[in-house]
Image 1 (cartoon, rainbow, N blue to C red):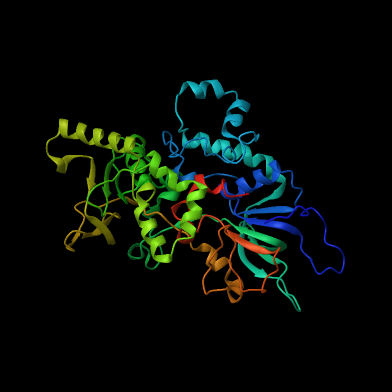
Image 2 (cartoon, one colour):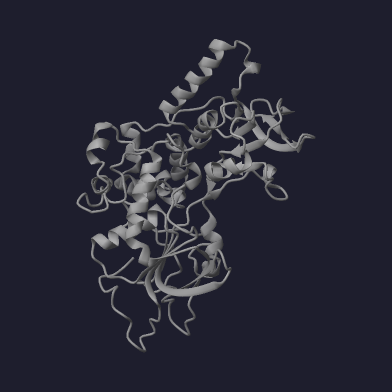
Length: 437
């Protein structure tokens, strides 16, 4: 990505006219890991990070009070690459005077809020290289009369003023994360204000349901970790609320993070996956879904079941329970009610039968995951350079352009959207920082 001579300014008349050696679009965990790796290797490259948010924050909408990480703190931004780095989670704890106290917890899984603070602490070391409040809108090749492309033009927009600006770079990393997946049946004509995605849960819900002690009726749609965490959080945030979780599966299912399964995230396993035929890759991704998609940490499932059992203990009639989990139901639409609530249109996934929800809801929260195709719109001006009519990548995540269309020391790399070529670890937090070298 960056050569040893990355800090050298192009000579006049060389044709290498670019402002930066590297521009990273998005300053989340992947780009932050790149910043740390460059720092640790003492590469004096000209690097710019462009970030849409106004400051560093990781999944702000799901920083719930008791939510824990799903991976070991040893899979942080630096340890597996260089345990001696100043940016390890252990060194962060030491700098905050919490190392001994954290050790006494006897856990590998810190609170998500603490891990966000760790990453924010790391990000604070690179503020001079980050343009916050800037949303990248396109990446295009710079004009070149002849020969291969030698640089890229990155256009961005100020999120407050709408003013656009452009920078040029020899290398570009696109690490913009996922965008909320909204079921088409719920977003026709625009998303209703009574329906939100889990990504904005903790920031949006207090503004929508302002009375903490009112008997709000809330629906949660989804059967994964986010949906389960919200199901638990609502019970303490709004103690008089009624909460119903709908999942199209037959039951909530546990995530698999057993030792042998966890080996699929090892870098050498990525090598193996990348070399597989397309059909084998697809089968492998499907078989590995239980590590991350539509599944819930076992300890959270235990807590949920215990809460449900307490209801059964005090009230045998399930229709009177304030907290319900409804399986075999896919939400395929909704109708307005006279009391300004909404009623959900449900499809029974076992027999196809259509019905309306028994209750009407003040709010529906979508725990429906994320789509990771935002890079395609961003990179549309480069499509004519592709080797195939899709953004296929090499093992090192570099986009495959046509032979001789782009100079060897110039390119675009993708992060967080490479499941098709690199397996489920191609989109997950704990795999990206191992790949930055």
